[in-house]
Every structure is written in C-alpha cells, then in structure tokens.
Image (cartoon, rainbow, N blue to C red; front, side, top):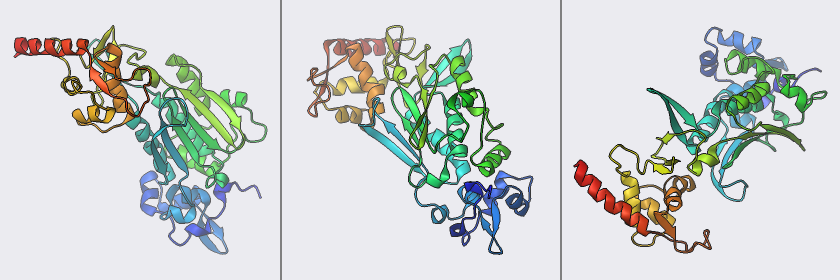
Amino acid sequence: MSISYDGLPNVRAAEAGLDDAAIAAAFPDRAVDVAKQVLGLVTAEQGMAVPTNGGAFLFAVDREAAFFGAYLRCARFRGATKLDIDDRLEVAAPLLDAVGLVEAFLKKHAFLGARFEGWHRHDEWSVPLDMLREVVLNALVHADYSMINRSPIRVAFYDDRIEVDNPGWLMPGLTIEMMREGASKVRNPLLARVFHEAGLIEAWGTGIPGIFTKAAELDLPEPVIVELPGIIRVVVPTWHHLFMAGTPPYPSRFDQEGQVSASEGQVEGQVGDAEGQVDAKVVSLLEAAFVARSRAELLSAIGMGNKYERFARWVQPLLDTGWLEMTQPDSPRSPTQRYRITQSGQDILASQNQVRRAVG
C-alpha cells in the first residue's frame, strides 16, 4: 500500500496518546494538531486518529506500551573485543532525545584534551564527536524499526574505534559505494522529515559522505561500512587508544577528572606547572604505594572508584614512567597483582619536598 513502517498505525499507543507538550517544544511554529497531521504523527484507524509507529517512537506518552524494550544500546568495552564490558546504557527515551543521550555516554568514557594556539584554547575529545553524531543520526533515521525489538541499534565503544550497528539491510538498489557518494533511499520518511524539521539533519543523503570528509580533515583513517546479515555496521576510528597510552595526536593537557597525558617525555599533570610540582593525586598514589597495593586500593587512595579508565589515566602512566612497578610483571592480569613504588618514584617524592619548601 506504499505505507512505510513508520507510517503504520500503532494501536498500543492510542490509549496514552502522544505528548502534546513535547510536540509543541519540538515545533514551536506549528499548532500541535496541525503538526500531528502534517508530519504524519497520527493516522486514521477504524474512524479514530491513532499514533503512527513513527509518532509513537518520537512522542508517545507511554513508549514502553507501544514498543517493548530499549531500541538503542550503548556499551564501553575494555580493549578491542567484547570480552570485557565496563559500562552500558539502554535508551528507551523519545527518539529526538536519543542523540544527546548517546553523546553524553560517549563523553562519559572519552578523554577531553585542550589544544592551545597562542592564547586560544580548543577542546579536543579522544573520539570524533561530530562524525559519531552523524552516524548515530543516520542509524536513528534509517533503522528497520520492524526489527528493533529483536535487534536494537547498538553503539560499541572500544579502545581504538566505535562501531554503530543499525538493524536492517540496504534498501533495494542501494550500495555502500552509492551511499558514500551521497545516494539515499529513505526507509522511514516520517522520521526523516521530523528530524529534518527539528534541525537535527540538514538534508537526506549528506550524513554518510560528510563523515568521510570529516575523517580526512581530522587525519583519521577512513570509516568502514559493512553489510552484515540483518545489520549495517559503521566503524569509526578514534584517537582514544593514543590518549590512553599518553600520546595524543597533538600536544595536549587533559583537564577532565584530572586525566594524565604524556608530552615530550614528561607526564603532564604529574609534572605540570612552572615550579615542577607534581599533581597532588599522583603524590597520594606514590605515597600509598610504599606498601604494595591492588589497583582498587591505589585508586581509593585518590578518592576514585576502581574503573578501567581511571586506572589508565592515573596508574598506567606511572608504570610507564617507571615510578610504579608490578609485583608480578610476567602476569599483568593476575588477580593477586599488586603495585608498589620504585626508587625513581621515591626520588620524585623526595624532590617534591624540596620543591614545596622552595615554593612555599
């Protein structure tokens, strides 16, 4: 009948209806009843106006009644495989809110650096947020929502890349190469129009070419798009693993949660100011390590929980500089692994006492 899935009636959402306040906030220049009709948020069903599938995803008062389960899942994995998951997020919020929730999750686990050009500061994240925003928007607009309860959109954050899995196959006649050139066949025209009118997308077909252009501007490897059984996967390379190793692609000083970077042979944040004073948290770590301690015990000494990213930001750089050492260097993942201060670390602490006396 030439009706897309997002235009079909959703009788389960009819009782609670749509959120008029949310519709008014998204489209302040339209009357709510007009917006519902013009944008296809409702349709006629047995003589009644009921929400469409697209309208329910976007503005249902009770979205869980209309669609069961989360339609988008985010996860942060340690390393480059799915063997070790560190955090997860399930998104069942109205569709227009999903982009911001995904961005907040990515920022939660990314590093924030500051690049300075003269007196001007430029914040630099360890993941390309602009590119990822386009990829997530593309997934939200073009997902096959008839499969969403069985195969949600997935955003997987690894150390070296972020993968976005979009349920569905390529539309008939469309190829990955055509997508790269800007060709587009809209699976969900109702959703595409709403996202466009809400100012979240500029025009159909521009998102995918844009991520390749942006990757070239940022000197990142090209993104990779692959078609898997029932899934379109976009793989976005990042600099995150370089930040974790303390070697970002530009001289940087981290300032999110006291993160640490290496620059020109020194660990910034550890020896970071004009007088050569070491960060107070690093001093606390070194002092705590006079007794061999576990990772959790060391992080507790600076008031932080036992998170992998926090270990990478604080403890790993001290191991790399030789200020700390493992008690079992041949078995780095041993559950009985402990960390202790080295002679170099003791020398640093001794020098700090001299610096403090000179500065104080």
